[in-house]
Image (cartoon, rainbow, N blue to C red; front, side):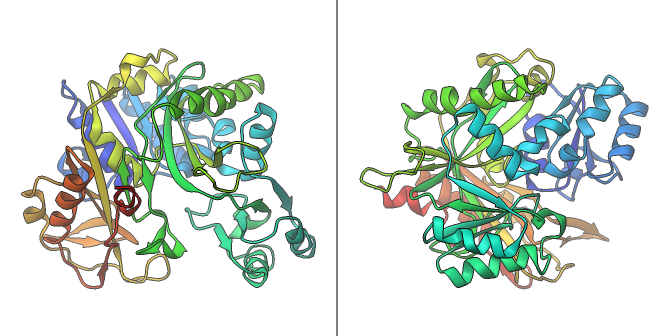
Length: 432
């Protein structure tokens, strides 16, 4: 197949890598791609969020499939435009991507579908938002309604922190239009995990579970990031939970969207909170609650999940995009994967770009897979171009093997002010 992958991060490199490892050879393109995708595909000088330019490329080149990685072009309606010219695309139309583009909308859909989730209120007035805090107690979660690159969620331990977050969004306009509305949300007690469900608008197939690490520092300290690492499977998700997650969380949303006129095709990503035995049960009364929905593959979860898939990934994506998905399309290998994100010093705040990266060839010799997140080619060097720079994935028969392989590869890599967490998968190890 001729396939275009839209995006430039680690997620898109992992998608492209997995397609390149299908049983049959595909003609792969990435728009715009990065220094990593350039080694296995043809990079196209078109921005991922430039809907008109991506559509024009598809019209001129007639790919068999377009796989949209990031959320922004989905929310902007890229899939809608591709469907108008008859090009199959993996990803939801704009009305479905609102599940990520608007947390308020996602809550409305969940409530209508009876999906367990935390209690929440939506506010646009800072005084009213602050007054509502008394209804929720502490800690409390403050969320920007719109897209904020994974950074628009603040878990406030004190009233002062909550009020500061509200002011940042509604007064200081820190997140732009994404923070024009805020959600004051019940804090859910427990352990988070990620479920990526592939759906064709009627049925759904769950991919292997995973758990990411959102905080910047070891021990889950510091501000939220786009994700500092992940591993799959997540032991907190037991086999007996999976049918419940599919039947009570994923399919009800797919059906509710269908009732509203949206056939949701692509990935429906459920960020879940699992309450432990003896933990504080959410107001929903369920031990498994939805923290958030995303409308695409997670990053860095994708880098840990896709390496565990066998079979034809292209067929699975195409079948989902064209309403023909079946359980057999997803083949899971009996192994574990762990991913460590290497970031620029200062991330998720300000950071410098253009740092020369060394040791990539040595890292590859360890057997780990190095996905590029924020890199570009500069003359004969590969240099940093983003906050999250590289995503290093190890596999093995056990989580210890996978983690050790990933960190062995990380140890080969260096660039000025390089930073990474040292405790990826610590919750899995804490269980042993």
